[in-house]
Amino acid sequence: MKPRLVGINHVALQVDDLEKALAFYADLFQATAVGRGVPGAAFLQMGDQFIALFERGARAEEPHFGLVVDDREAARRALEKAGIEILPGPFFDVRDPSGNRVQIVQYDQIQFTKTDRVLAGMDLELGKSESALEELRAKDLAD
Image (cartoon, rainbow, N blue to C red):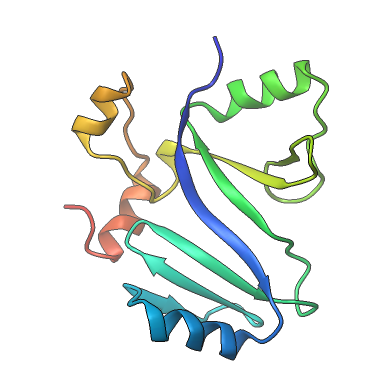
């Protein structure tokens, strides 16, 4: 059985000037919070999703998006069976045929959520790990 796509957790972009990029987004949109805990980076929080901005050259991150699946190990097996290289590093990243970097994350391990009704409509029964629930509670997004 193939792993199921659930959603997109985050988008990571490289920017030439972090402060200008933050000003651009802040002038146009109101984020729920802006995280600045990583040098050369800022995280525009959108509830349970985020946009990560990395200053070009300051860090090794390259543009990518976090693709949420129901079963990360099933995704790993499917990708390996298809001959897709798992990129080295601390995360589960691959490249699509056009070279785009995709980070595979498992629904129950991250703060990204879907309502029970949306999950039912997608024919999914998924819960959250305690660590993911703690992240959501810290943002007042879960009981």
